[in-house]
Image 1 (spheres, rainbow, N blue to C red):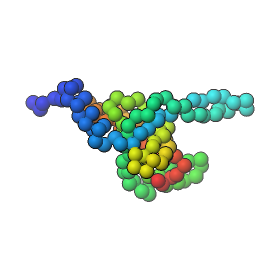
Image 2 (tube, rainbow, N blue to C red; image 1 turned 30 degrees about the vertical axis):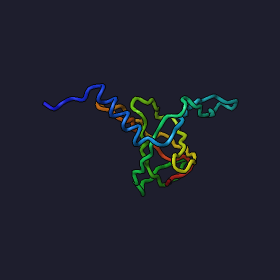
Image 3 (tube, rainbow, N blue to C red; image 1 turned 90 degrees about the vertical axis):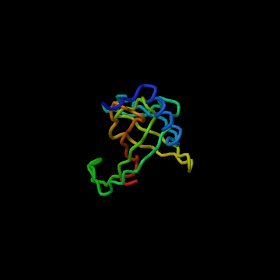
Image 4 (cartoon, one colour; image 1 turned 135 degrees about the vertical axis):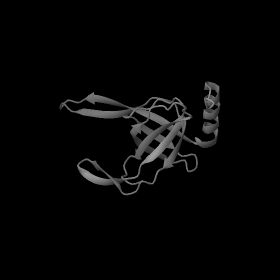
Length: 134
């Protein structure tokens, strides 16, 4: 029978991953939907956390296309990593400050994955806002 990882093991591995790989910082923005006078809705994004460490991984799925606003556009999907247990919703946006360049980029969450049995980092699929291919 294979050895199981204890909670202490997972906590230790998660701390190691955070220290070594999660170099950028992120503010998680939750959507707030308010009805306007004409009966529609206005979405605003409200910061829900102080900054949390993160990392962005380019999956290089070039040539993928998606329909946005009735138009077909290409998309490069990225994966973001967060500390174990970070709560991120499919409706969130993520404001990331790069540790290397200091630039700020906003991403929309396309899939927030459920935690795995042996979660070391939280994985979230994102697309760069304002650009089909990033």
